[in-house]
Image (cartoon, rainbow, N blue to C red; front, side, top):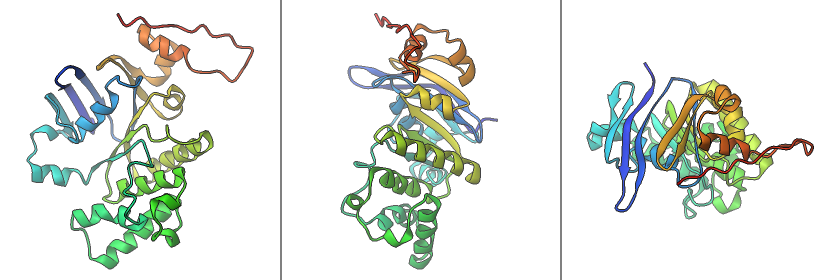
Length: 263
């Protein structure tokens, strides 16, 4: 049985359908990619899966149970197993809280442990993501972008989740820092037996980290399959257009740019 199943998920707003009849499943221990341009519906899908955004219809099953039918108290307990790493490390951390407080906050909210125990857990989490526990009292502004994303990751891991939604986790970072964060995510996945939904517009990252990928356009999944197969032989014109836009490191390689006509 898959760890997470999304069945015919729909999210309607007043003037648009952001997510339109989306279905896919993620196996335990897998990194599943959800890729598309800005506005394709991929981030809304991820947030609907965690009920950070209320879906209009459909089902999201975690270990066989439909999250969308959970009461508020049951969903609160479920959040211990399902967390999110946000895109912008500059906007996702409270600037008035110290780094240690930010990481400790989920433990406080869920009433987990006395203060000394929580402090020890925060120090452990700092070390886990490659940060110095001596910097717990610093504010977010005193860290670099990559360090801030590590703080966000430590916060997401505080409750020992098994499933993480990674929403464009490195798009706001420099290329060299991107590689470090991706390497950290892969290492943590192996060590902690994590399952990832990796949301991105960057197909180069998908090729590096995702075993399977779903391609979204205008709220719909237009192609889904093994990453290697889709990169080798894309079937949908939109997928072909996305792949044709990937820059090549070899200046002698001439790649035909495909333009996808949406209308």
